Structures are given as structure tokens and as C-alpha cells.
Length: 174
Image (cartoon, rainbow, N blue to C red; front, side, top):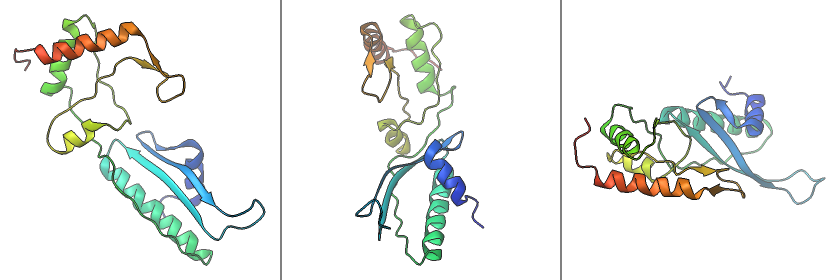
């Protein structure tokens, strides 16, 4: 028995979250030639994200196993492939990069700068993977990744101030 059942896999299609820190989404499903014809082939494309890289890898293996077994039981074949786009990383709040950010933020009047976890992917993932400790800074966007996304001019100015302060801090923040 697989640790992820077909029913749970289907629920995941709808909700996205497999665990609080891990998502599985199939954003595109293509197949068939008509609404009343059983398709000879179906292609799914999706994404798995986790705050722990090993969880994402394990989930890929589970999904491939479930698809392969279900296809076999139905007399078909599942061709599964995956590719790593980003690798999860974690930086401690005591790290110099975080301390430097917090000092710069306070210097420009951000009273309580606070690091938060995200599921986002960025250049920081690759830089950290290659040993360049990097954090992502928020710029105050609202309704992110929607057609209504915007940023207030005051937030944009504050972001520019923060970037400038980060580039000009000279003292050791340890």
C-alpha cells in the first residue's frame, strides 16, 4: 500500500496542501478528443513545493508510484518525469544576513522587521544552493500573483531606502 492514496491524491488536486509545509498542485491536465470519449492519453503537469527538500523528493516518488500502479491496474502505462527547479533552504534568524537586514530595517524606521517563511521561489534558492547566503526582501506588494497586484508608492520608496541602507552598512552586525 502506498503512503499516499488515490483519494488523498485527488483531494490534493483540489486543496493543494499535502502537509502544512508541502504543496502539490497539478495546474494543467490535457487529454482526449471529446467530452464523451475516454481519452487514450492524458498529460498532467504540476509542481511540488516544500520547506524541506527531502519531503518534496519523497512526494515525487510517491506520486510516480501511485500513477504507475493505477495505470498498470487499468492496463495502461504511466510515463513520469520530474525536474528540480528550486531547492528549499532555511536561514537561521541569528545568521549575519538576517541580522544585517534587521539592522538596516530598523535604521530606516521599520520598527519590527520580522523574517517569515514563504513557499516562493527566487534567485535566493539558487544562490543559497551555491553557498551564497541570501534572503528575499518583501517590497510591500498587495494581492500578489493576481491581475490586481499593486504596490503603494510609500512601500516602493521604503524598499528603495532599505536597499540603499543594506548597500551602505559598514559596521559588523554580529
